[in-house]
Image (cartoon, rainbow, N blue to C red; front, top):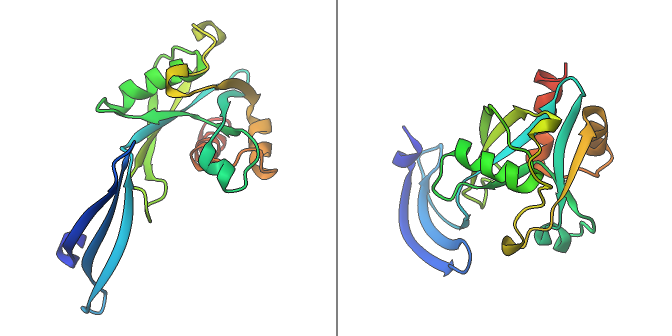
Length: 193
């Protein structure tokens, strides 16, 4: 039995279509014991995205970005977020979008990018699936200062950090972004061994 066999959608209502799409849905779900239960959920659809960690194996460094995130701020995080470069797909392939995002945000025009996995970041409420990438970089690949697009409200600082320092920043709370933690842990296990 698939999940499709266990769900019957009864009603869907749009709550907001301002920037992304927020819906409330009433559905029946067939529980493991065979009983049908009516449930209500809100889902936030902002599209799928991609994220990338540039790394330099010889220098043992990674490139991250630091920027303001309002949702983190209103949840008590009174600092700029340190993150891996990322962006929404906007109807492009994950590889195409992450190359463009990495260049916009970090200033590096990367060569080959390697997809390492896909993951849902907050599947209890958000539909977004992220495509995770890593790519080697060299100083000569820097084609601009980066910083993002001011027209999109981006005001991004580029950070080049030793991998050991980036991992220590997870432990002490300076890096608190899930996608970034996942990519740094991947790099520690598979790249900087």
